[in-house]
Length: 202
Length: 262
Image 1 (cartoon, rainbow over the protein chains, first blue to last red):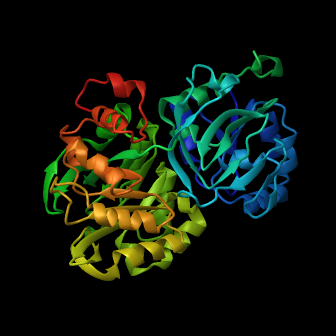
Image 2: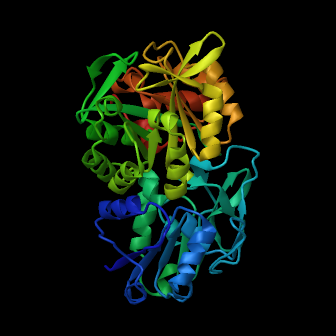
Image 3: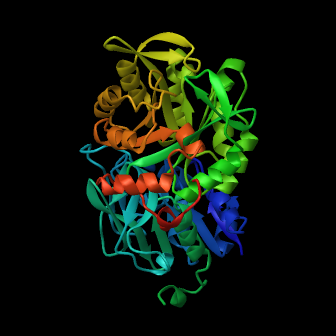
């Protein structure tokens, strides 16, 4: 299977690649539009700052490219936030795949939200075989507001969307590559998605 | 609900796990990759690897070991020991480490924290602090606890967080290796004065000590080495006990059924 991890100026993507290798898949890293478009599946990772990441994506014309992809796309962490409409981080207009907005956690408790937390209200093919309130590993200071497109929810300071899905676009706020056996199963579910849209909703 | 983390620490020398008692005498406790895998299976929430000889002998943490660990485990891990510059950080992150920790080098050149945070992000920068009580004053020590610094623990930690440290790993040298419990007072003081998570370290001897460090010490995570390495405390049982005490922890199926020493 051809799997592309989108290369951009956002942090450490090494652990995503290693997690995919543990599942027997060797991913290619690329920012080449042709290769991304031709891939069977695309992963959009990222740790970093939203406005500089968006600036980079626009410069490379990856913003319109990602928005138009037809194959399964998985955003992780900052990847999820950049797929939303807007982020408070740097007051940034994002890719608008999902209509929800990204807010900063108010400093009522420690920020970033770092560690293991439960996901619930699970739906969609990525969570096949995952029990309610499964534990996942989070590290983030901003979070997407709850919305109709969410497929998992988590509570920290406020309730937020821990996962989102719209058509072929999937996104996770937590790090599946670091979320133990639960995360490994979610990644495997993504890798096993059929390439056609009808299959995702079965 | 965000859970409290249990973090086994593996002190590494020459590619093997060791544990110093009060930072001096050293006993062997096994192969780090094997230990890491077994801890992850037993329900450890995170792992920390410290190359304890790196600072003193000017040796760099072995990236190859980090790479082997990354291939074996699917939970987050931090690597520290002897990190001096951005190239050291880049090498470890590229080998698969999720976070790096800096200690003495940051005290000598606090600007390193700003530089690391700007390039790699605060989320992967752990400030490790070895502290020692001198009357009512807590002082920061350098080089694995061998040399006193000019810095007071409280003001140093606050400065480091402002500069971009994403997490604090606070080791009480007075408690480390004693198995008499964590340093609850300084843990609470530091945890309540910074916005980032605090990992308390040094002194774990019984499960009760973990209850105390979370409830009284206000720590977000607790780190220990020998009590886990020598199976004096088993992680599944520890987590069940914490759960029964209404301290939020990540319980997994394996936590309930795992029967080995881990």
